[in-house]
Length: 255
Image 1: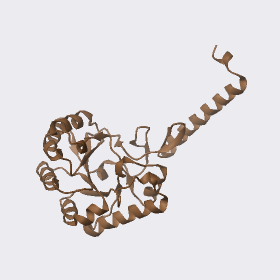
Image 2: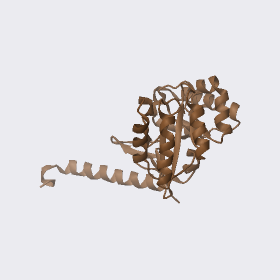
Image 3: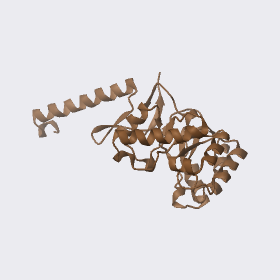
Image 4: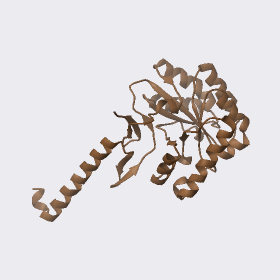
């Protein structure tokens, strides 16, 4: 009945498009190209989470506006023996180099969160390069450690941004668990959101200036430890080579 309702020309078109899609999917799965079909076109994705059989999770903090709660966060991490990842904006890094050094000296990982916190999908390549190079240099000049990770402000990205970051040897990192601490949720609300959403290989988004983040963090860590999770910086969670990105942003290893 279906084939009776369409012309031979339309049928050929449908079959051709289907074959193109199959061939493209095969190509992506065998080459590890970090792209997925989205809205009828190929779209590149950052790393949202990591596929792993190990009960590992990465905690991350975006740093852009202040340091009011940062000491408390670091005290909690030290007490719980947890290492995490901070993503710092350049203007924050330059305003608070003492905190940048304190974070690095405590053994935490630091990635760039851009130079000026713009919507980077609106920038051309030269502007993107300037944002990334400048912010990395600001961090490295204080920590003496190479920056390897990048998180786009507002989670805003496009193919050009991901390609350019890769050319600069930066992994673009998103998240699959959003604490929504920037909405000033209560500590209990933040805890409930995070604990029930975490899975193996999750990357959790917090902000160092979240109003109740430091209050929620001890119980989050305790609850996840009770579930058997361990905590690692993002750089120790992701795969560095021989990987592909699935349609939901999960980074998957292949050999």
